[in-house]
Image 1 (cartoon, rainbow, N blue to C red):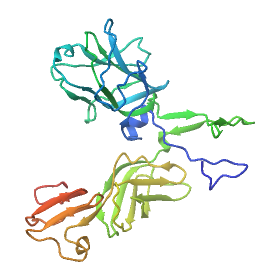
Image 2 (cartoon, rainbow, N blue to C red; image 1 turned 180 degrees about the vertical axis):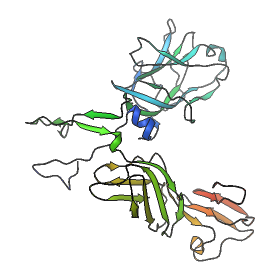
Image 3 (cartoon, rainbow, N blue to C red; image 1 turned 45 degrees about the vertical axis):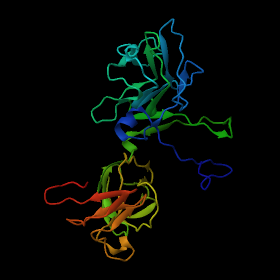
Image 4 (spheres, helix red, strand yellow; image 1 turned 60 degrees about the vertical axis):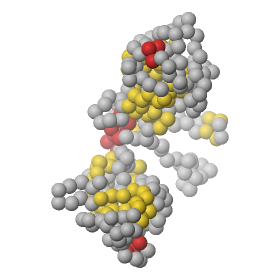
Length: 348
């Protein structure tokens, strides 16, 4: 709810982002996180962040444990993992413990992984983050064991994005109004709101990717649907305004502001009037402190051989010299970036 725009006769709200399987694939609409659905069987302690207490299943039948998500939704996985404590005999798991997915309440299922000789004590990971790896997308996931103690697991975890199960480039939904937890009855039917990819701003590139904390860097942002037809476009890097210089549907140039030291994480925000927030797809602009800039060192000269350097959390140091001195110590809590030389074309 936008209280600054609402009144006693009109409620104005700002639409939230919508995660569907289409928008997750095409816009990276939300970041991966630990997923929480309905754990089964009920009452297990397999998702309580305790890796000591094992799951004790009724081994007279096939043992299962897993998680189901809301109707009409799927979990798009980046990773699944299980924790085994005090492993003394892996034979009860090898070729006996499976990972499965289903979209029809287990009327049918797909085998996603059969654990083999690689299983070990501690966390066992199934990683789907790499480019080109097919990310599983199911409403329900389960681990199935078919031998005594093959479900002797102390913890499991699913990481990814929960999304509406839709591969359509548009998605319509009917708005509802709540006061507290009570839905407000309306005298007129509220029209559906449609999310449409043709109206969604999308960022695909930032150049350059770094700029001085002193500001005045001209940055070009490339993408789709970046030009407003009804107002202005607003850009911020780390909550600092980047003043827009030129705009088109596929490109924006802006001039950065300076940035005082704040121990934060780089973030980009683009808001296009009439279209809303842009999908930034995890792309960031980093404010950097230059090795050669005396401002980086409090007005002093850059470090010399034998000195020690500490880079605190939130600071990004760009080493813009060909050869740096041999230091006594380098402590990196933020990040250090090495500019390309004659043989390297990329920043490190």
